[in-house]
Length: 441
Image (cartoon, rainbow, N blue to C red; front, side, top):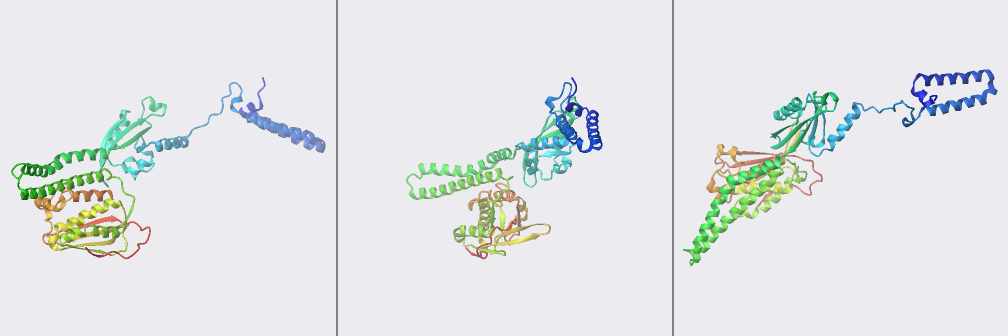
């Protein structure tokens, strides 16, 4: 059977010869016969048009032995497919080549390692030696490798990384070097913090609870026994039991608050808080406590507003702890000064600075580095008598870690202490309603 026009086109030179011959014939007819040739020329033109349509025959109608055209999937199409697959993964995922060059990653991975760039070495963005070594072992062994590692900046976070080699080409599938390595990360921070919380509770909290519990049990036994018919002793013992129960309640409350903050320490808050308004609220809340201690609290703000990005309730807890400590341990100085200011930093965003100063006995220099440790006290007996649990400054430290803030402590014996909090300044959304608050409680 003779070939169709479509097949002639697919055979290359035969299609081109047909078009050249038909065009030449049409031109000769027009030159020789002039007007009389128009009907023939029109017919020849229609034949050429029909031939053009016939040459676009679908692949399914090709003759026997004629392979349909195959769509080529070049590197650009493959890269787009990889981008879609990596982006659909819920956990942080990074795709590298066998030489640790970053080929692709998803948004979750960029949140973990902000320095990731396509085409750059993985080691520029993730400097964890254990992770890099696991990727190299995966390339060499051709099997998935697993490693746990900890990041300490900006906050402590734990991850489990799995590096799995991917063989796509025939050479890689036949035992050659893998084409890619897929790195997936699992956040273990919450599990690790729960483990540490349990360890802290067994090692420290149980000891802190044992003393007040023993006191409560002892007084109950006394009231039931020798002091059964002594109303004065019973009243005195009940007052002591109440204070011990309140101490245990404060300890448990601080432990729960600390655990909540630690579980979310790696998640930065997104709310907007004005520190001038917040410090005014803290001063008013602690007003009765300050009056009972005969301590005045003065607030001075150099700016009408100091907006920061943060969690309102956690920042209140932070500053309540610091101001309450200043009132309790600096009571002999009879006053506490709180100053708020905005501090410029060259090449970086400004900071909101809150300094809380007392005029008490001060803190010896050798105690300053350990003040934010759990259950650490400068004077254990004095702290317990004043209702301290040893967790207040640890809570302050972890709240500041979550807010990417800083705490500095400056103290000299006999000159009081200054606790300074620095948080990144955020542009105000709306102007404040009035001037900065200042006054005494």
